[in-house]
Amino acid sequence: MRICFIGLGTMGLPMALRLEEQDFELYGWDVNPSAGAPLKNHATTLSEAAADADVLITMLPEGAHVEATYQALLAPELPAGRLFMDCSTIDVETTKRLAGTVLDAGHGFVDAPVSGGHEGARAGTLSFMTGGDAHSMERARPVLHALGNKITEFGDAGAGQAAKACHNMICGITALGVCEAFALADSLGLDADSFFNLCKGAAAQSWILENRCPVPGPAPNAPASNGYSPGFAARLMAKDLRLAQAAATATGQETPFGSEAARRFTEFAEASGGDLDFSAIYATIRNS
Ligand code: NAD
Image (cartoon, rainbow, N blue to C red; front, side):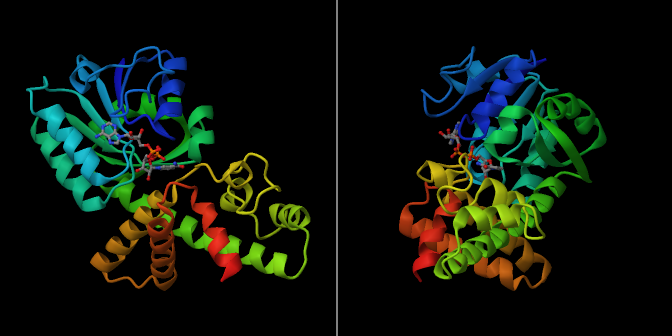
């Protein structure tokens, strides 16, 4: 199976490397020409990467990037029968619209946003939440199983992004809770390592706590212990929390904690430039 992988950033590159290792014939493409250097086949143009690909995977920052990429892919009469798989986190409405365009052009479509960070991408232990028709899902499964160990199918196109918006709202709210607790622990004179180890093995345990501990030291591989290099950039966390708020507004469901998390991360991303890991928001919480 030949795969065109578009967007070789924090998540896309390790996912593409993982697929290469699993013996998929893979061609990568990124607007940043050096991003795909570690791959065996790194195309110089999008059309070169997409030529003869059975599956076209996108792992891009926002809906506008996915939309522009799909327009470019669909413009020059791409022969029908390809599978478009969007693993980016984008909004439900754009996903449904793009799915319609792709299906009308005679291709398959699956939205398959992920959780698990770059660590999970490299190890093939991502969690996928998917949306798509039965035929498209059947074609997507071999690729999804090569990249992840938990695939939850939620329904038609857009359902994966709906699940991802709710999932990341938990992550954003949890991240603020973890930051506040570490700030309070510090102000009470508690040792950060001891507090981390306590929480890790007690009811306060979470993936966010263990893998994105916001203070340098206790978790050596966490962004905080490595200059807050992402990880998951604060601008992307802010974007995801705004997606959840858009979904909440559309359905009329009140989400006051999600709303506050969206506000705090958006403010932080704007003030800091947004490129550090989201856990860097700790500095604004400890000092305020
Ligand atoms: P990133 O910013 O590190 O990487 C995005 C890549 O896309 C960059 O290399 C950029 O050059 C490239 N790009 C931008 N526009 C492009 C275009 N038009 N064509 C080709 N390449 C283009 O972002 P990331 O952290 O890898 O996240 C990608 C997506 O996955 C986002 O939607 C994010 O919300 C989601 N996500 C990220 C994580 C994480 O932990 N980082 C986890 C789950 C989901």
